[in-house]
Each structure stands twice: as structure tokens, then as C-alpha cells.
Image (cartoon, rainbow, N blue to C red; front, side, top):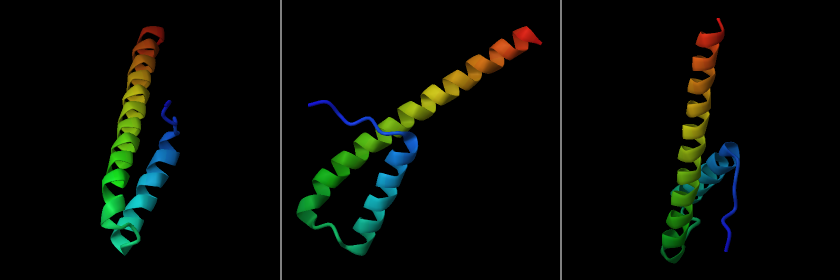
Length: 68
């Protein structure tokens, strides 16, 4: 099964929504383990997207230094 690829903003929104549901007690203990697994996937996607953005920014800065 292929994982759903979310934008950074979508993943962050889902993490925020999940946090609110956990804090309000909407999630049962039985649902907690699966919710935490999903949260780990969203956090991983966010880290990977931030890493790629940083890498692209660094590359652009290097190019700019050579072009100036």
C-alpha cells in the first residue's frame, strides 16, 4: 500500500488536529497507538520536506554567489 504524500502544510494541520483531539480526550486508548504511528509518518514527511527545502536554498545561495 502506497503512503499518501501530503504537503508540509497538510501534514502539519493533521498533526495539530490530532494533538487537539488527544488533548480533548476524543481519542480512546485503543486508538492512541495507531494515531501515534500515523503522527510519526506525518512528522517524517515534514522533516524530509524541510530538509529538501533547506538543501535547495543552500544550492541557490551557492549559485547566487557564483553568479554575482
